[in-house]
Image: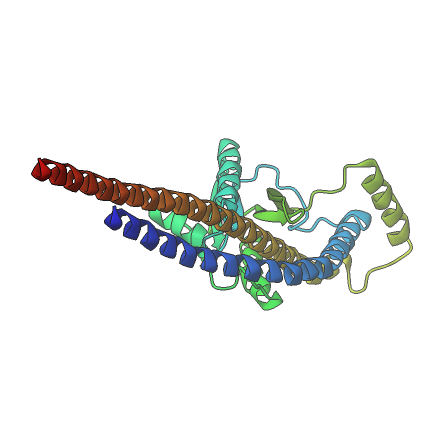
Length: 308
């Protein structure tokens, strides 16, 4: 019994050490979520306004720009997938990968070749393990991205959009990332960045109508096409940056939730092991008492026999 108690004590010590680590990681993730949320809140208005500006120029000025005009028979699409560099974040990366796989399947069903671009070591490892081709990868900044990182990611995507498909270019650009909804909810989303999809809701249609009226009062110098040439790279960069920030906030929230669950499970396991250790100790004590009582009884019987 003593050996069994020692085993329980070693397991309790080991689980307690793991609990300290998971609790520390939970607190670190919780502190980083606040910073990530602030960055998302700061970047979203700029990205939305820049999107509105690009849409207004392209739609209001009736510009037929290659990056805003639908190709009649698109042949190739680029998919940018954002995952994490580190694990211990529950299903965060796997959910984003599933969304990317679903999008790839739909694009392939539409007879489009898919070029995959991946951010994050988890996504890179997924495609490498399956020996699937990836055009370009980026790692090392998923938990705290900067605008410079977004520019580095956007540059080859914009270049691929400008090239002809016969030369390796693409007709469409899609992005898959995890949208931060709340501390408890993070949703993988698939969005097409280019060509631009113009507004469809009644409210957005009204905005487009107003932008048409406003832009009818202006002339572009040197031209609307050149304005779009300058705006579109900024548009792609801002959208990629916002997606990176949304993903970073989602990663921290998912890691906090996973580490809290691990800490709670460790506490439950420690309680269970303590109960088992106490039961083993009680059984050991009971056995020792039984042996003492049995020995005393044997001695009493032996003494009684010798007296006769």
